[in-house]
Length: 67
Image (tube, rainbow, N blue to C red):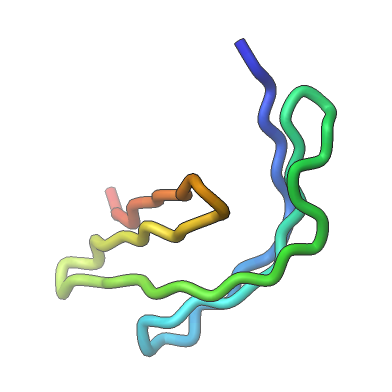
């Protein structure tokens, strides 16, 4: 098992756009340092949605939901 750690911030503008900065490491080795990014997200009327953001040759995916 490998250890992935990420810290940063994301700003959602309410219009479907995301911007932010993050740093990350795998097994203690830095793979990103203060990397700026932009992406888009979708939000459905029932308050669910999601995003898939490219990061180098990989991607980060998240889902938005309420309970």
